[in-house]
Image (cartoon, rainbow, N blue to C red; front, side, top):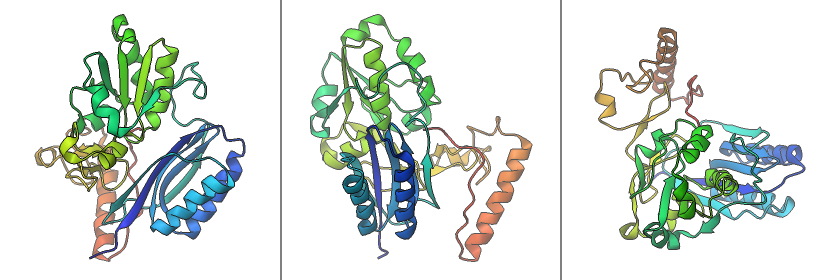
Length: 309
C-alpha cells in the first residue's frame, strides 16, 4: 500500500506586524521539508493548505506557534493516497480575502459553534442557515435546508446579504464554509450590517466531517476542496468528482458525457465563454500532460483560468 500524504489546512485571523519575516521563514522551511500547496501571509493573519510528511507539517506548525506566537486553533488534518498539489506557493498579500466594507475583522465576528453542537443550532426553527461558498461549490454538496446565495465570487456576497428580507436580522444566522476562513470575514460583515445573532461553524465543513459521525451528519453530498482531489466525501476520502482544466469547476460523471466536454480543454460550464484561442492553448497543454505521463514525469503546468475562493 502506498504511503499516504498528510494534508494540513489552517488559518488564523490575527494582526501580524512582521509579515515579510514570517513569509520568508515559512517559505524556507517549506522548501527544506519538501512541502507543497499554497499559503497566504497577510497583516490580517494566515490561510493555506499544505501537504507533505506529517512530521514536516508539524515543524511548520511549531514554527508558526512557537516563534511567531500565532496560537493556531483553526486547522484540519486529512490524508490522500496521491499528492494533492503540484508545487509550493507562499504568497504575501494585503488581505486574507477581498471582501470590501468598513467592518472591523478584529473587533466583531460571529460566535464559533463547535461541530458537535452544529446540528442542534441549524435544526432550530428560528435559525437561517447560509452557505457562504460559491455556486460551483454548493452544487456538489451542502447542509440540509441551507440557503444558497448562488454567488460566482466571494465579493458578490454582500449583495446577497443586502437582498435578504429585513426581518432576517432578528433571526439566528448560522454560516458555514469549507474550512472556516470565509465565515470569519463574512460574519464580521454581517455584524456590521446589523444582524443580531451571527454564528459560524468552527473549522468549517472539513472540521464537521471530521468530528461528527457520518450517521449523525446533516451534510449531503461532497465538499469541494481547492486541490487535486477536487472533492472529499463525508468520510473525508477523495470524492467522485473530477475538475475541468479549462475553468477548474468540479464535474460529475454525467458532466463528462456532454458534447461540450473535452478532457483538459472545456466543459458545458465554460465552452461558450472560452475563446477558440483558449481551447487551442488548453488542448496543447493537455497534450503535454499526456506526453509527460507517458514518460513517467510530473507536468507542472496550470490552466490559464481559475475559479475564485
